[in-house]
Length: 378
Image (tube, rainbow, N blue to C red; front, side, top):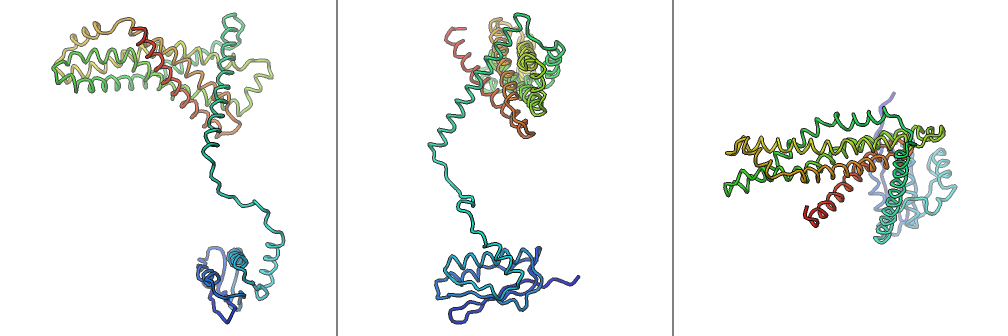
């Protein structure tokens, strides 16, 4: 195989004619010379009326040459210059005739269009309305499944319920333990910065105890379960949707809401209050580690102060919030899974959407319940 000769194009002018001499091997992989010099001479406003080609020293060529020639021909036509292709090899002339045999369809090229802001707002509003409608339908179907369960007519396997309890309960204890301990540590350090100024380190126990039992314990456990279990529910149901397993259940006479969704919702309703209580205790332990280790407070004093500050009502508020969070997480994960498309990427989108939806629901519900408790003086 002979070495390739570098490709080049040289231009010369004679009166109103511009001559482009093409030389070398114009093959894919070669570095084509820039055409800007030729294009500049064609569009410099001079009186050039004709473009001709010289191919006496042209070597091998392929689609690389064709691409560059089409650029020259199109630019010349745009400038109103006659492009003479009769001096080109017959193969190139035949390909060019094929290129320009059928004119380009109007609108075939992609055009960058700016979407008006009013259209963006309208589409966003319609998407929100559609999501709200889908949520209402899903809640209604879930309620019907719950009524069927209370009448003893809901059909699902008890082993599925226990497996879901195992998955979202004991299997989640390590991550809940770690996060709750760290949250308790953070609350203790944040409170100690200000309380130490007044020599009131003993009140760190009040801050950590009330903060964990009323808010942070249930909230952090819910966010963890939204990212862990809510996404898992969406991925499981989404994969079943992709594999047409849900359609198969309907064909066999099983109601997917009862057979698939109900066990998952019941599992989180049972487990979330317990996880919330466990997170509260781990947060209090984390606060104790900081208070006893870094401040002049004994463990007995910390525990006594916590017992005086935290009451059963505080634990009860956190447990109720945990139960509500469990329902919201299960609804978000199962709803996005049931709405999943029929592709692998749709499963990932469903899992992501389940986490986002769950966290948004959790924050909104927590805000509403906190305001209610404040108004009721609880």
